[in-house]
Image 1 (cartoon, rainbow, N blue to C red):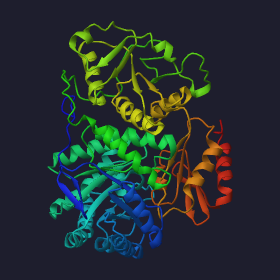
Image 2 (image 1 turned 30 degrees about the horizontal axis):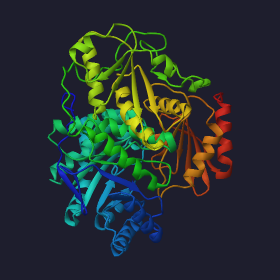
Image 3 (image 1 turned 60 degrees about the vertical axis):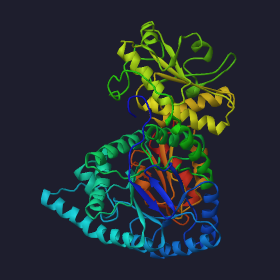
Image 4 (image 1 turned 90 degrees about the vertical axis):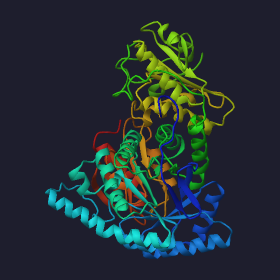
Length: 559
């Protein structure tokens, strides 16, 4: 964003098969199969379904060489059926599979956390500068022949950093944080540039939306500082299902898209992967309305706030209060954590500001009293940001309730658009409260949506948070049924974070800030985690949910 207007980050163009990524191309949509890659018929069928639903690239897991080789068979079968969607091989822990996939796939995703480094055990390692330089040389030695093979075959690569699989080496040197994640990516990108291999896309993902946004921003800045301009893939990993999965994905992806960052996206839902594509489409289209929108004039007063904007408190809004929720009309009754702080009728009496604001409008605001801020400008983020800067320039510390109103939308569109509009404002630190109005959702559904948006930014916790991966060919159990069973047993708990992971690839790491984890350990077997620690291994799947609830109760956290 230049000032308050939309501008897209400049990148080189990368090609994966027939699809061009970055440059002047539109934001591309991706999804991933949940079939075994050795199930040729099933993988062909699902890849074709995903392509028909709008997926411009389809990713398949490749645990080993045989899976990587079979991607070539799947590709041939798809071409015979008239489906020319590029296929992406997803590699974990097995560089040999990456070399095989460089020949059979259109693009290969590798993970810096385990392409050269061993699997992490959360062990603190000490290196001298000379020893660390030797580690970097090992990366160069391992990555260079892979890049040359990809160059020979016209294969693109994605360097995909996951918060859940940072190596002990990186965490020991830089930390388990945005700096560590960024450096993990940059180490590999420097080898790519050194070897003049530019057919590269980069991604950094996390289940924590704020962490993901902060890290991608840091990565974009780090690349710019070293004159790198590779396309960026966006996604909130382990987002979950239903309302929570859609809201978390929309908040994270929209925040970055509206800043001009992002060239491909995936909405990762713990559902049928076909369900990801309509959400991704509406999210990309809606977030990019700022392109070509009318200019938003105003005075830039600083860049991003250092944390939440300081405002004067007024009852339950502003000051040190958590962001408030408004909703519910006359006769609405709500109890417990889903009770709004203000009714819609109460908020209706507050002054309404319509962004963008002129100097005269900002100066006329009566100090101290709460105000409602809304806009009809197509670039919601820019208009709201301009209004908040205008209030700051004119010394106004009023608590601000940001309101969004939608008419004629489906419930799913309302979820996605509200999260895409309000999520960035919350992460930017501008909102003292939020209100969602829509003719497609009931009062209780609108209030639930507002609380879900607040929870996704971790600014107000009102329910159990589930960190749940989308199913793929590595998943050891029926993820959708298992997640439903875990939710049914634990959804009454407030404030816990529970990870439900199909396998151990990213599970323990992505659950690093979860209170408890439920991880597939093998066919029909589950391991339970308390934080990063595995406390019970290989529990029969039919006993695992009861074992999880027993663990939570034994810790005294069943409240």
